[in-house]
Image 1 (spheres, helix red, strand yellow):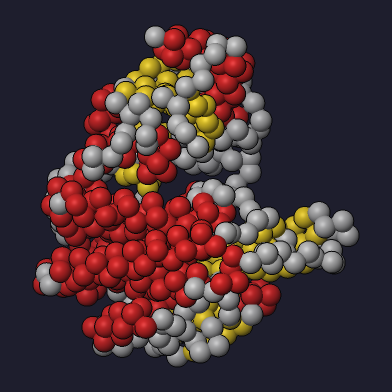
Image 2 (spheres, chains in turn brown, red; image 1 turned 180 degrees about the vertical axis):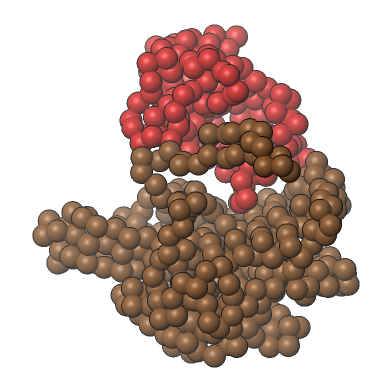
Length: 391
Length: 157
């Protein structure tokens, strides 16, 4: 189910959000720089493949989770229902098709982006670089894993900085608060918050596809590992600090998710009757961590003697990347906008720095009672207040 | 499951004050439909957008969407009726990781997908969609029976 989530999430991001920047082009008209513009250029048949495989992945999720979005079968100790042998076979067939499509998607990226010198130069340009720590979940071999293993952090040179179990996360991560935002800024506790600066002396780190690639010593499946090697080789080693390489890393993960889905679906036990082990104790505290498509996701719960939750702490994928997202946007704007000349193309290129992270602010933002404490003031060049907006 | 001819989707978040108006209207409509003998109408509640919403309407001949809206200087409780053509100039990303309804529908058409030949969007002007509460304000609540009657009238025709 989780691999299915990765497959449709990464397909949607690449084709609906990332591809317009490259296929239509960063300077393309805004009304064409969308998935319709992409389809107009790559053809309806490719568009149909996109929608078909996104749907396959959702159907796999729905088979296991009863609903594709917001699955409802998860329970303490397992699942509320299993899957039939027919469903397992269907998952295998759809998984095979998704793997082929993942390979095609990587080929599209290579043809459209990597063979275009202008795009390659853009990816490598200083405006899109950020020299940060990286974080992600790895297995015993330090290979990428989406929901099992230890959290690994590497420094801006690629050297292991820390490796720890989820339950110890508060020893390694703390959160900084700025008055102008109601998202927090997680950073490495040992180094501390040094402001919006990158480098080894700053505790800012990055997660999600590029962060995961940087902390991993290879992928646990063969085709994904080949794609990983090519990515790392192209950049001359790790860590890769080019923000736009998030798109490439996402496609490596798309291949991995499809391969891993097939590995898991190949286990006949999946359609067996043992889908839940009833918990026998009332837990009082637990920390869980998974790699969500948008980054490392921490859930920390404390409960009373009845098992009723008393305290919750969540650090979600986008929150981990929040400081880096702000810096990437700022750096792209400073690097690309010269002499005050701004046009749609340049603004879009600044947005590209933001879009690469595939951020989800509705997940990352938590505020009670929920009203944004936001006030926008627009001043003219002489400092006179022109407009005040209170959303 | 066999599909009815028409799907009515109530959109929103039922624990976010007026944002739940689409959901509450769908529930009220379902009760009314039971007495109308319209077996070919499926009423669903959803908190979805973009491609996920597209998935929901595939295979139906007609779709009716009930949602909330906030417009500049809008009168709370007012009901608007749109077609996808009204929204065509909004084709863009709805968020940084999803497309909006107009884009999803256009994409569906371009892909020759089995999308409804008629899509009607009812929207209620709301006051508050950011306070956690189960239920709408007085003006929005008062709009629910009216919107139910409007949708019923559509369905009867």
